[in-house]
Length: 404
Image 1 (cartoon, helix red, strand yellow):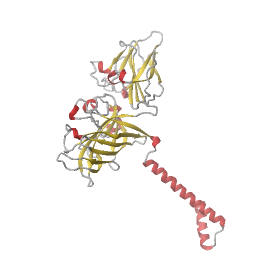
Image 2 (image 1 turned 45 degrees about the vertical axis):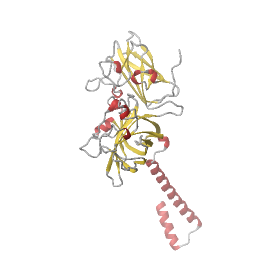
Image 3 (image 1 turned 30 degrees about the vertical axis):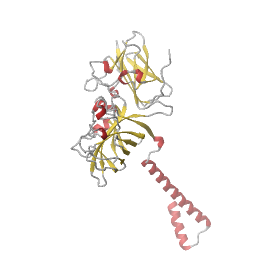
Image 4 (image 1 turned 30 degrees about the horizontal axis):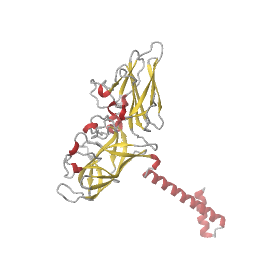
């Protein structure tokens, strides 16, 4: 009807003078069309730039590069200055400068590395690197992607706990200023674009992407700490790939009340003879920390046990971690149920529970695994059993257990 009305008005305007009512109708329709156009434009702009409420900004912590020490100083950014494998040259490592780096992750599958780093020669890099196409390990590996494990923490990480991104070369830049020189003392200051390395579109090379998760900072000795590793090229204004770069850093996400986020947490048993730390078990040769807890069956009734939960307790050292609550395991009728209560200021995004007659879970191939994504609670259980209670994406408020 609106189309017919407009046509009628146009004809009327050509033949007769419009009355006031028709003009008002025309103006109203034009205003409505204009408003609709503005709404569509606003919706498009929002999709291109995520709203702050849909993103989480986290602090970047330099990887300690343990155990290489002086030849590989702590840093978050590596820039090969001779375009080869000069990773034993201290000036190739850049550490937090000024406000340092920020890692921001958004719900639309993008992330952003931004801020400044500086090397020991006074070369400052301003990093504005965007990541896109977030995928789980199942999605990533199904597309042919790999997981590059190296260094101290990288070799101990589990692919199933990682998320993978690709560097968005259309949006990413790095600006170098100050005393920036290559191995021949040539000035290399300037603005560079950033591409993924190896090229994800080259079928002849592996596709590692940028991985994020527990143990993600390959060259950091804090085993299991949340972090990131990624590889790229700096390209010049002709598009030529001129310098290889790496990112390696830990990630801490403080909530408004303090504490940290992105941590891994496990429940610990109440006595030494009740639990075993993964890293202390000679049958495992594990680098991942956490505890398996023994529970005895109560014949004709339920076995109920309450355990403390600790986040960030690397090497099973609770003095390094934060108490985040308690978990209660109830063993009855051949299976186990888990309830938990979080401390004030604590929150989490993932939960994984194991219960079985074996000390540790096994994967589909029957091999022992500690990857939380493989955990399940058995049925038809009897006799002594073991439980593992894991939480991921934990935010802590810096709380400690109540005395007594």
